[in-house]
Length: 204
Length: 152
Length: 213
Figure: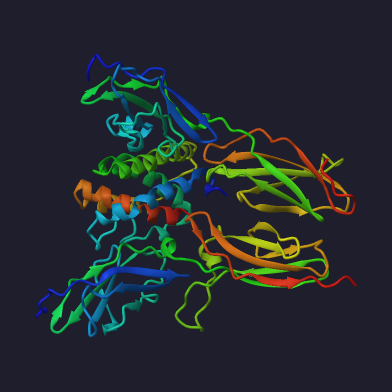
């Protein structure tokens, strides 16, 4: 390491919907291209593997000031992350994320969903948020808010059949994501209502 | 489900994310098993198969095996391949969080060890100690699907 | 053992190909050898010391050998190996990777039977059976092998071209309140979460709801 090359600063993690990104401020060296390398350390490495660190090869000698660490943060334990700058053979000290990161703290956003009626059939289409996600879909006949029904689904990017509807009735739907690996759920999406055939079918 | 299952071992209920462990292992299975040239010996499945363990002993054997992998196996599986090492880290850290939950069952006396499970686990340790540590660890890691198949 | 002079090129790409746990060993002929190559096959149970010869695949000229019977216990894992012979020369034994029938098999789509009334269609799904030695042997459904098995069903309204998906764990699905006198096409696939296994979709079958009385 070389004291002339400062360690990266402002190291932080942005984690949303189980996608985790490490970012840091650029190290400026006039006339030089600065590259960065990232390493991670899980609880296992700290307690059983002599506090060893593992390099993330996709973020070795990168010029970017960010790294997608999702693939490596694949257990619900406390991880440490560090970054260093490199110019040629010169390397900075490691800059280490303050504290730990555990994916249980990821922020979960409500899912995007599209509710449609096709005749007497209530249909829903959900966005693909990744393999860790399930969707808890609640639906009810308008006016019978106390008789809410629920379906837990994993199918995404396709029109999934929820239920059949009474002729001419209005049905409302909302959904939240659930990530079993961290046992947490997002808040609910906006409610969307549609009307079953039997009356003028229109969007409410 | 998304592969996160609630495992029932008698009174002990443990939620485990098997999909992540499985996909981590599947990604390195061929690589790890190719490092194990010994066909005639298994750590987990011979001479006694895990499938012959009584239901009442399942929790104890599972708890022992997670301890075994965390304490003895993963640390001796470092390779020259960064991708493989990262996947081993992923599996090891997943095992750590599952072991913690199994440990809670153990403390609440919901994971009692009978004679058979103790004997079975001692057989596994004897198989393990019959090889040099790196070969034994790599063989054990290569047999992770035997453990996962049995658990499921 | 009077072993022949083994400088023949090796059989290539020796691997198991498995469908519904019908486990067949396949390989490619050694490079540059024309006709006349013969093969013999052996297999072993992982963790057990012995290699076992397969008599029905001794001195064969085909490049496959059905080892389903020998590898039917899916709680075990296996290796197999092939050796080639030509004009008094032989190759080395060439081995498969470790074969785990439970996770390394492929699964056929389910059998789908459909019927209709004027306003509904009924779909009955049957999971494929595990390979068995003979028709007399007791059938084991893959549902018993993979308890977490689920069906994903696609229903296409031929008139509106709209496709709906259903995900069910039991094997029957009734889709009520359909349009009379309309053709619907159905196909289904199997999904197992762990181990992760997916069949392809079954061949699409179409049926029309009866005309309004």
